[in-house]
Length: 460
Ligand code: SAH
Ligand code: SF4
Ligand code: F3S
Image (cartoon, rainbow, N blue to C red; front, side, top):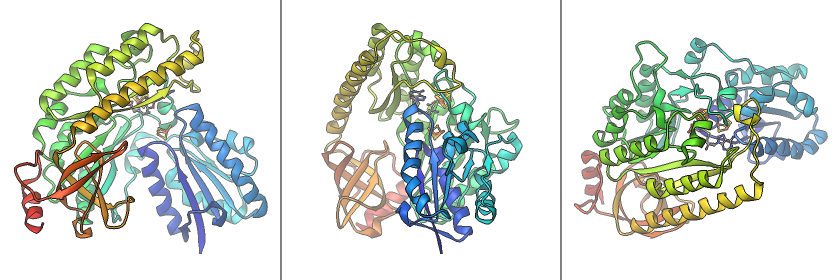
């Protein structure tokens, strides 16, 4: 049997595309291996969000060169966002590369692999598809044995934030028909899935371009009625499109988890304007306040870019101040990276790199203190956790997540996998908590499905 080695970089979009890739490879008779040296086909599904991510792809390809020299039959393929960005140029830069497929051409992978296998062609497929075709080709994969799944609801991005390459490598926004989304969720639940995460670059603008399509908030309300599904999450939200209707869902819907990732990017109005984000600092903080009114225990996480061209010490001070005001549970922070084609790539920046680096470190250090405060304040709480599987921490341990997406490890019977349990948080580590399963009682704080919970407590 032929073997493939697949490595996936970047965001959830690529994770889902990689599943589509694996389905096709299996149909071609390939099975997966964990060592590139053992593979007949090596495939990288790439990310281009920052220059470093792009460089990494070439670094990896370089590592595979000796394998290709040893075995000329080996097929080397690149997909994803770097492939989309570079297209045929990649074949020139990497003479031993066999094929390049972009973000709208994942469905053609099998056909392309066959072309390479049969006549050693070097196919490139990076055309963007029209919206109707894309609506038909939304990734879907129903066979699964996991408890949680990503479900793509919208693809692409229309926002053109001045620093961002995503609209260029993923194309314009297209929403998936809601009937298909709901049908997929029902099928997933039948297979044992208990939590879905709706994904898209900007899920808040779901359905806006498609005449007659329902809103994202309405989609969440309809999912609430699917029996057997315990939880719903979504990523990513754009603050400018976060409607009151959607915020109210956090107060109203029992299955919607108490977490939102709401990237702010910067705390200074001047920089937000230069970034073309479409909101100001006060507007962002007003959205945060309204989220907390709708759901007092909501956890908000964010993304912040340090060192956007022209960012001054004062601009950065505004970002630091926003950290205090917003009190994010966690942030992902990035040093600005100039990306090809983007508007910001043409901007000059007078600030020395070392200053940006120092600011970046200050930001990370202050956020770490805030995150630690959250972690410690959570100790002793009893919260609902969806048990996802065996923990990597050791024999007999299980893991699950809190509503706010924090991993918790605890001792438990594997029969609990797929169930909601009440867990007391007993110790905090950097990336996870340790807890213990307790019988459901009034001590449990959360908006749990009453049915699931009484069932669970009965069996404990
Ligand atoms: N669609 C999502 C973000 C996708 S990219 C959104 O709009 O929120 C994930 C994160 O990468 C962004 O939120 C941003 O913080 C960061 N990012 C994007 N382009 C970047 C660049 N050129 N340099 C540094 N960070 C960048
Ligand atoms: Fe990039 Fe902005 Fe679109 Fe997010 S909303 S993917 S940051 S252009
Ligand atoms: Fe990266 Fe492409 Fe996602 S650039 S962040 S993999 S959309």
